[in-house]
Length: 403
Image (cartoon, rainbow, N blue to C red; front, side, top):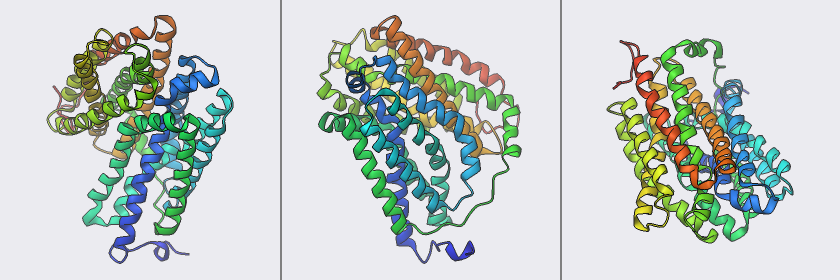
């Protein structure tokens, strides 16, 4: 069967395309929620599986490092496949992995259930927005892509608190079970409503990979690793910090994380506008706010409204740095921007994994009360790296405005 015969016309099938894009957006929400859900479940997992909170935190590291290492290569290898079948397969993989997590009776089975979807997540992330634009047609491609990214952003901001609330109501196994059922439903919905999409040409990965020889690009990728390490040294264990330091009841932790995510929407909005002026200055500014918010959290743990303000400052800076880092890395090159974006996703996951390790070591060695200080110190280190990165910017031809 030819590609032409299996490709839907955006004009003739506009309603069907709109439904397909909505399914892609909700699928993106489920897939990214699967990655970040574990953060809100760590205290419950630690208690039920009989492992330390720092050991449970390594499930975050495992997922993140798998995405980091496999993402660019698997995306390059699989992006040319027919997208409908590719997405259905990915959703079925997520359904099976979440089902396995729901019945896991020990830490190691749960670890396997985390590795499997981590292999598929970057492939979906790297191809979903492009597919949405194709389905919508050139005139509506921008809106379609924004809808898919809305699903991804919603998962980053709300996936953890929603999972925590679900775990409180259903147990952590029930939270994974719900994700399994929803993933299966989306696979079925995609099979029914999504039209076939023509295959794309294989990516010449070797040619695009030349950006890894550019010092400014590599420096920006390394800066992203530092930034995300700072963010997730504290964020990975935020639920535990709220319970053990701030005295928040386990049944209320999900609502606090929901507030953290809701405030983060403001950070996402501010960050999206700050990058229009200077991405490096925006990076530096939000790192300052991040360090202050994280360092102030424990001293203000019982200060009522002031504690909430410190947590809000952390939430705003934490969420703003997602789009800031993505734009900063992609703007550091003049070609192969898609690969640059994927490289930033890998860098972010490297930082997520390192942050989970560093946070776990801090809890084991110093105690959870020191978590904010160590995370703030890493943020300051990233802040000091910003002007060093700026000095590597090309004098001409760069899309980045440097300080």
